[in-house]
Image 1 (cartoon, helix red, strand yellow):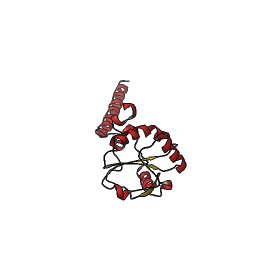
Image 2 (spheres, one colour):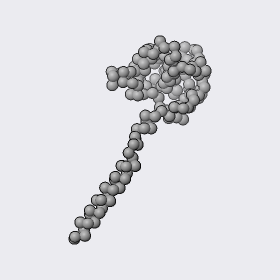
Image 3 (cartoon, rainbow, N blue to C red):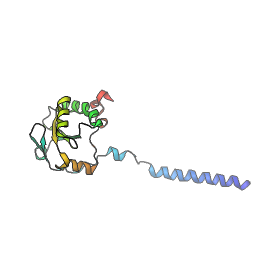
Image 4 (cartoon, one colour):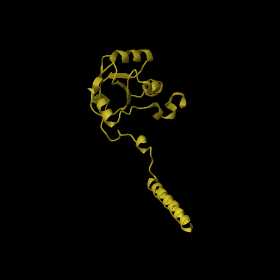
Length: 163
């Protein structure tokens, strides 16, 4: 019986030691670091030439040197619909800056549904079509991780309702 208490104390000490080692190896490791770091940093944007809703073209070569916000969306996408007001507000705040461009790229939707959405919701920025990822823009986004800008990642003053 007297050795039993020692074995229990030893087992508890071992568990505490293992726990301390695990914690020590994780100090300074932010589990959200991957989420907070863009996989796009340091990567070149692919060249593209896409048809716009108004019949024109948007070309990567014409956007060189500008700050470009690209939003991949579809009319049926609920998160896309939810982020739309924040994106419109962001666009309107920066639309007067000649070095700023915002392009919404429709990727997995019909042109008729996308056009209807644009007209009903009054999308003020350029909308381009890349069906089947033919323009390579959507392919590259998929390689990097289909991570469209979410309104929760916009600065607080750009979010709908300041949320």
